[in-house]
Image (cartoon, rainbow, N blue to C red; front, side, top):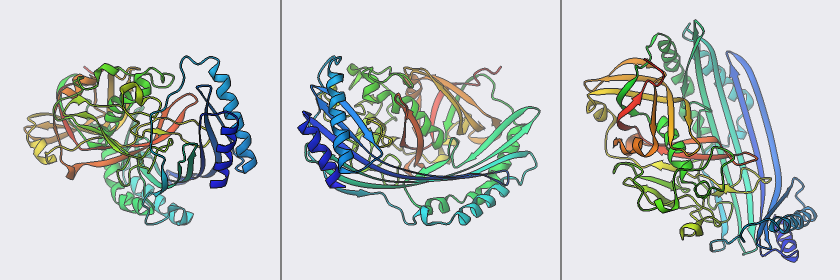
Length: 481
């Protein structure tokens, strides 16, 4: 593969580029689903190709091909340079890249058991068992159980001398129970909604989830939701579980602190950001209990790698520290706007896409509270779990979330179940109301395999570490009386 990359870089330089990089990406994916006792689908796909990014006359050009040969690499490199020259005719300013030391080496994620070596029969046996256990409650009328796996092997080389080889194996699983009555549908998921749980790991991750063991509880809670009341409108103290916290971090801190959104360069999908460059070091993003990091080195996280798609090493950086905005997620091209070098957040979802600024593992750092201790310290309020829906404006400022389930808290104890509790807020005000975060014993990393961005849209694998946290006087029961 090094010869093919070298051929492309040599051709790009000969054609007049001042910088070029080449990615060769080999991806295998598998998805298996069972719904209400029937196989819903088995899909396997492979993708292999190369992409060349080049700067010529101060502008970017990009071209790609699914033919990975030296001859194709040369042709694609020349096309990338020609596109760059055409782009330069309308460019407003020449591209400048922050410096980076040329990277050399290999990196692999951890996987004890290759999920692609597990037979389809064994995978279906697990899914049928979990699906059957979900149907233990008569009120549950539709069930789903799914497994997903991904293996990606990619190479990167640049005209600055970088040459990198990386491999990541990812595993995901989910179960969902739906209960229906009088035209109303409620759902309960495990280990998370919207695609379930994901980790950079092998088959051992799926085994560790114990889908069959959790299915009866999931079904029982789905049935209970049918009879549960909605939350009345008002302000309540909220304890939010780690899985919902991960999405809260994703939407209201992760996306608005992507530097390309702050600069207004990304707006076509999910908008820009309320954050400005002048806010760094001064914006009170949250309370003193809110510290958020971007970290591409967390073991087992979907947001981890050795180097990003510009050859910048994975690293840990503070985004918010004790409530104050400290930094932004950046690339080599955007980082100079804040006087820094890239913190390694540039990634593409395949060989035929140009990299974008993407989250790595953006996490709410753990606090000191035990969960039982936090509930006992809450006189009245709600504890809520697992996202059901969300909405946020294109500046990432006003938001509304709903979860699948909640429990009332009265005098420091969990009480009756409530159905699909929702809450709303304004990002800095909401994070400013946080007065407690649970400890590392309750902290876990939640993989998100479907983060969309860009036009044409790219899907990134990101993650968020979170623990249950408490927020005071939050508006709940939106749309309820």
